Image 1: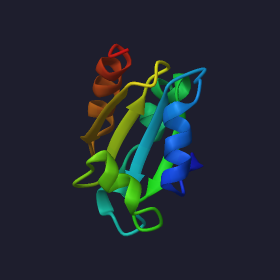
Image 2 (image 1 turned 45 degrees about the vertical axis):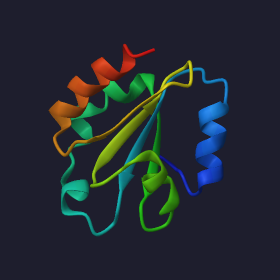
Image 3 (image 1 turned 120 degrees about the horizontal axis):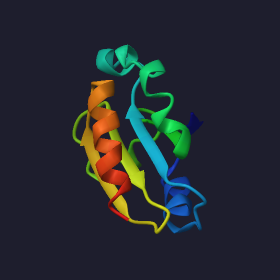
Length: 106
């Protein structure tokens, strides 16, 4: 996962010409459900995304800007720069389901 360290980086992503959609994982080192998330089971579903990780303690502006109220949460920026989410998800199966809906929100 690529660290998303600042609001400026988020704004660059939001306005960039994207080759594939971006998935942002909002997380924190102290978050139990974030640490327990089963990334291995979603590995294949994530291949079509560029995945970023936003630590809410290191970059506390972007989560609030995006409307994140609890973590783990996810947000998609589509190839057409539409924003889908944020969606609070702690189950890998639910992430796969949500991504199929989010990717059709172009």
